[in-house]
Length: 91
Image (cartoon, rainbow, N blue to C red; front, side):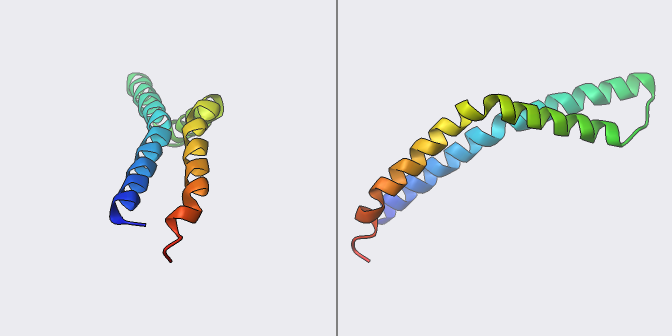
């Protein structure tokens, strides 16, 4: 296993991580912004409301998009497991 293959696997894994994290993060950002605007307009000062809404939105996004988001992750895992004997043959 040379440095190039390590960097390739690491780069691919980080890109997959960013793909997995970005949709829930953007959904939480939009939900927090909308709840913040509503709270500012109505002068509602409840601190648990934005956290509850963001939590529900993130869970909903993960439930709805988990098949789409998990497909590249499963492919990467299968790729690493099939290459594992060749990657570790020198050790």
